[in-house]
Length: 217
Image (tube, rainbow, N blue to C red; front, side, top):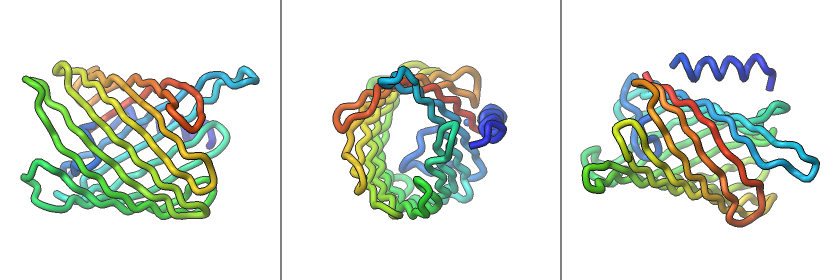
């Protein structure tokens, strides 16, 4: 992707804030932007791979969220998906449910991405947290199934810890399982920074770390 476009994404992420997404709808009129950079361990040639991600959500209606999910590196864009997410069921019940449909491009192939999110909030003493499961299928040149299980807990008024288990079953590749813990800290209202690690559990891959910037308005 051209360097000027990545620079524009960085600036957008700072000029724009994240309540937990997943099964929870974005409030009507609310915008969330995130820019992240992931650094993997050096390979056998001593080269550290760096990849980027841009994620955006907009609350179009009380139950309807529009979004954009983009990933790539300095050479090419590996994923660009626009999606709609619809929250279903009683909004007052503890268990949240949402269905999603995305369309775009993955690995240079046109793709559809249907998904389902299930979430529930909880309290641990005076601390509040959430559990969420995102289940998606990428339907394109090859079919890939993805699952993300997330647990988050607000440990202070300005800091939260998040632990995510990521699994995938790509038709044209190797199944994988990764652990991704992170710390999110609020620098000022509407602006948060995320520091995270990536640990492969099975299926190969490299250890890495992640830096993310979240903005909400």
